[in-house]
Length: 367
Length: 93
Image (cartoon, rainbow over all chains, first blue to last red; front, top):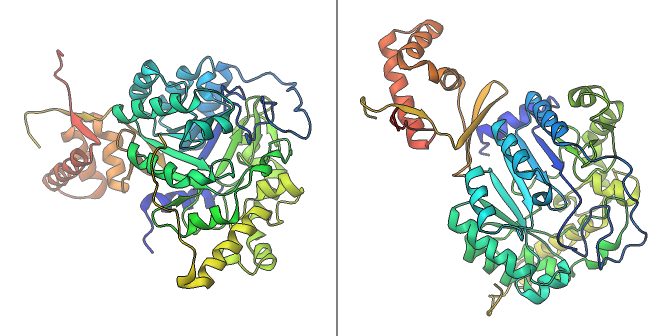
């Protein structure tokens, strides 16, 4: 096995519970209304089981965010992600992003890119983040707008992708595979290829941060998921960085930490339990002394054995304890979507040459 | 590597120390470069100039200054090729 020097360093750091990844949700505000968005806020057109509660805390101020960045830098955090909502809507986005670059983070920005006009594209080029990670919602205006609920979102994103490509900004595209867009998977892949950006397909949908299950209504079909695993050259997962291929477990509370817009510290972006608030005490103190974080680390170290007992397809079964916690209240219980993916992958393996065909060649259209 | 040209750290490359090793983030290229112990030492002291760094390496690692200087030149070539170093703009630019 060829292990990169960086992976070796990260392994050492994470083994010692020194976080390498931190993410900050700058805001829950967004200019799109994606039907399966997991933010705990009401968005137009969503079919929530219950209305989202209004936050009672104040969002972090600019000064608090800068102080947070200083603390994360001093803790040795390497990858720092600005996310949302749509982070570009934050009134101090550019100052915050520049501050992150000045602190030598490998800066990742999660955005829908629809606000990236010529000026913003120039600023992103000058900012030179490590990467933008852009979620795409379809290969046609009709599909994308059915997902985002916003007329013109597709054209705006396409224009932004062109601007970013022309300026050499490093982009990863991401696609949550849902039934809303599953018929366009080949076209979406072709679209990414035309732009020259890698694309990652994620067959797992995240519940709402407040536990509502409406996003699951849009779960993709077995056939769509099967096509992902029977097609060559498809990147799978929600990120090129956070899990190496074939890695089953995650680094919740060991290599990851997450901060919501109000300063609540969570063990990762998926584990929506507020451990403490960074206004109460320094991040490093929370990280090193919080008893709940210690519990989570101990749980996570054992969870692989639980998966082995839960499915005959464990060779293929990823596990996200945060998602399981959200869905079942039990971080060790394997989550149904991951079990389904594992079953489909086992079926493909067992079928051998009889496996269904993968993504057909795209016919036409699609951005 | 030209003797008449000054070199500087590429402003598009950020860096930090992870577990005692310098990790260079080539933001424009999307690449990450990990330096070994000596490379980290050199990178951290780069701004002090070639002769000073060569002297410090010779002293720290118990090797002749000439050897240290030659090794440094090879290392700087590697850093130039990777894009971690670039030509410095003229002082009056």
